[in-house]
Length: 326
Image (tube, rainbow, N blue to C red; front, side):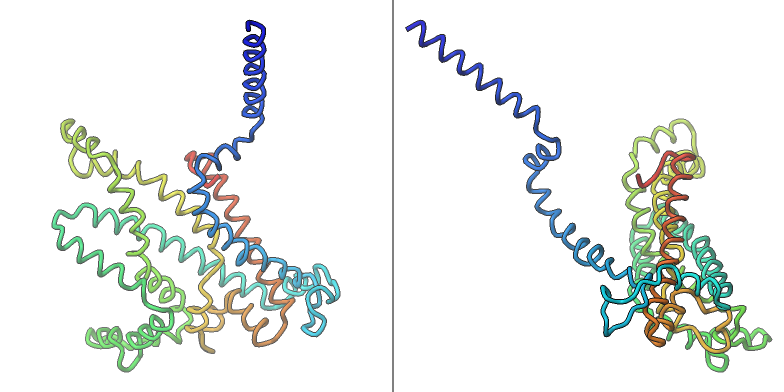
């Protein structure tokens, strides 16, 4: 009897030892999947979307290094390696196109980045809830306008003969201005119409950050004698900076990706010298000119610049503010 008991105890000890070793060897990811399987199940469609629509199509990027022929297909077209990139760098349109893209991109970044922050702070400071809701609705609405409608509105409002803006200018004794045909006005119209369209929508994320600030911090500041400006300076802005930095890093990664539709729709022969950007150039070379390899190379060149900007801004932000995407 005693011998059987001893054998059973020994067997249990051995099994527990084996189970312990099994648990120790299990990968943390496996343990996490077993524990949070329902969350991983929800995550599957997102992963599938990026694999199917973002990563698998990237195999087509290789035509930038080939002399692509539709009859031969991607895999059977001849390799030309960096010939298309060299052609773009030697092109007479390279300097002007790159300059227009860089100037318009950074102008838009400088104008568009602070606008949602300022708007969110103004909305957050309002005491009247009804007016606050009305202002939010009014500022969010332009975001849902399509680019075609927006450009149509710009042409109607800025028309030299019947536009509202020129009517105001004429009533004040000024001379009508053909904004859509004036090269010096193209960048201003493009950027500030974009600010008007997206500032309200962009302020949502900042408002959500402001509403998550602990109310006790403001109460403590009031006891210490801080006024509204003091609370804004010492509580609101410092807590808003990490969110703003993350948004800035994300915006810097797409700074060269100007909206093709808007630039193309606002473009005409009179402002072509300042409105020709890389995205419109790629469209003309690729779709209209059927130079698929060359246009892919130009677009890939643009994407590489975006990647370099994203990595640089992320590294600078990490070293200066400890806030970064990774």
